[in-house]
Length: 325
Image (tube, rainbow, N blue to C red; front, side):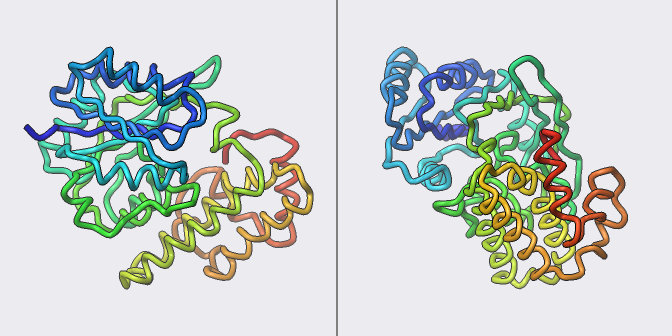
């Protein structure tokens, strides 16, 4: 029998957290779940821990694949070749899920023949948690502007995904944003549940909290997104939405991380790269219709940024320790 949902768990040096992640999947209420674990060249005991876990849970459909470490995007692409489920989702090896997550999302997806089903989630810090709501929004441009660009609070229809040419960008970080923004043009049926299922655990040492020269990688990722829309002759149709996500990323959290790079020259160069890409590709971005009509302090801040004051904002973010934009 074909699995109902396949859940992909990419692992790299996750010996301290992967058991909690797997426990949350083994305890799922959904019948016929497939768990696909990718050991992406871990250098400590992750592989041994997973193998022992599988031995202790022989009644559960858990498949372990070990590959050479080539980065998270490569691990996700590899995992997609192993998926058998009618739908699939992701769960990172330091996060965990409520036991009803995949049954509820699967039932929602089946009910309306959805291509993507989305849930809310919890930001989980050391001593607190915060609810993050995603949606509802419409497909296409509206999704691009409003989606939370993470993979693991969603499930995707497998055969539909495999009919597309959307892939994770090998060798790049921000692979989830790249994948989802390229996917936006293809989605016609999306649905939402207002229940939070995933606990997104914030590790200060995690890749998303590393403020160094590697944030330059976002430049490459957004060039891939632009090329994808141009390749599919959708650039003009999606121009305003593409422009807005460039504003949001290069003046938002990417800018925040760039502002905190320790080395002064590297910090300056990284900020300049994002600023130059935004202004070269979208020289009139201050006139963006989403920027001008959407409410909120974030858009007011974006509208205030110019070449003559961008380093003032960088100084503010560097010294006032704001966690997100």
